[in-house]
Image (cartoon, rainbow, N blue to C red; front, side, top):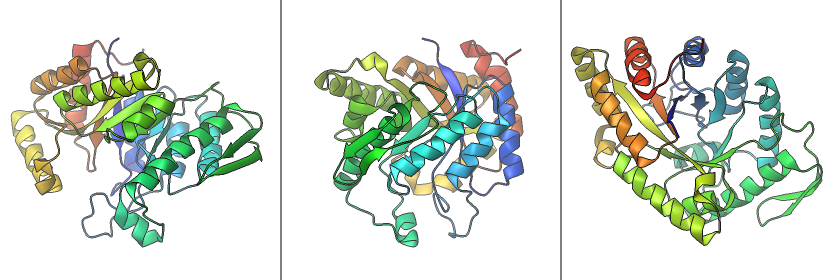
Length: 315
């Protein structure tokens, strides 16, 4: 299966006008996915005062602004919104987008946001339990006329979610890297799995772990799409590549000691880097962007990198 390409852009420290410009660029340039993130404040934080637009309402605007790309969020935190409330919002977005909505959900991790908003930051085991229950709640509301669910954290009692999505059963994605719980949950419940900021070799290893969970859960491993988010610090020229590499070090700092998964260098070098993810089994590769956007690099990516993988702008 050919690898496709997406754009993942957090709605942080950027105007809505610039975000909309990016979405429309992606929609007409051969990408098949655009997503945002689910944060209430800067991530990673600088001075805690940066702008960060709310995710559900931003996703609705994304749906209205585009016509081709799949519309997603990587990923909604199950602890920030009751999954039944989230399901209703996502059905509305599916109608706005004429059936292009994708549901991404995770266990949550940004403790400072929980603390700031007074949301309990439960131990990871509890959050993983809530994730597994939340996925089931969302799926039931997407697909069942009357939904009932009796979980420890979430319940449905003859619940309705009308209208139903335009899609018969919208894809539900799990995001995260945890091998004991997150990948097991993906094997049990998800249609897709997204991995952020890891190398091709580590992505391939995680895919093998997911395959093992699928076998234990009696699930066909090929039924789960695997995608990866890669930080975008490519430059259109050698000079721009050096400048963007400096920006990468300034933005991520010490985290680069434990994080991988960043595009650096020129388009020719990035073609080789992207091929590594394709070989590792990625069905889609999302470039993860932070404002201000390097528009020269984005145009070079579309004009030089995407065609190397058979991707052309829609006619």
